[in-house]
Length: 129
Image 1 (cartoon, rainbow, N blue to C red):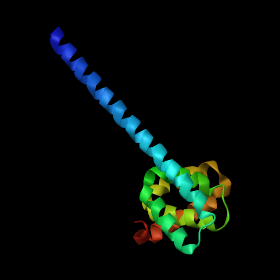
Image 2: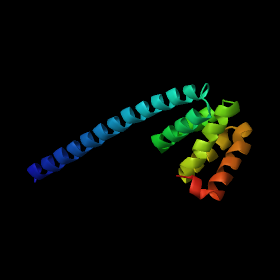
Image 3: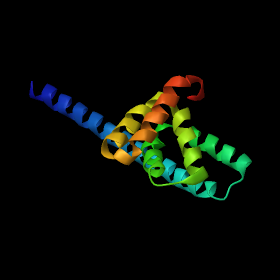
């Protein structure tokens, strides 16, 4: 009976270690994606329209792990860059909605924009690709 328990505990330990390793890999990937995002966002400031479109597509390609960072960024920028970031969030689609709602609940100045983006996501699902 003791040997069975020890084997079960060992199995649980192995599973926990594998989970921790997967989480560490995900964290490293997320940090890399955020670094890529920050570089892309900086380059938006001086980009022409063609390059802005390319950057927008690259940001969308980073996936939903960068949505919280995009929404934080959106709350602190103005001008054309803000428009590109807003369009990226719309294109990310429904996975953005909970993050938008959360940001709106903690920043009343952002509430109108969050509502607008959510309405665009719901109205234009074909853009959410």
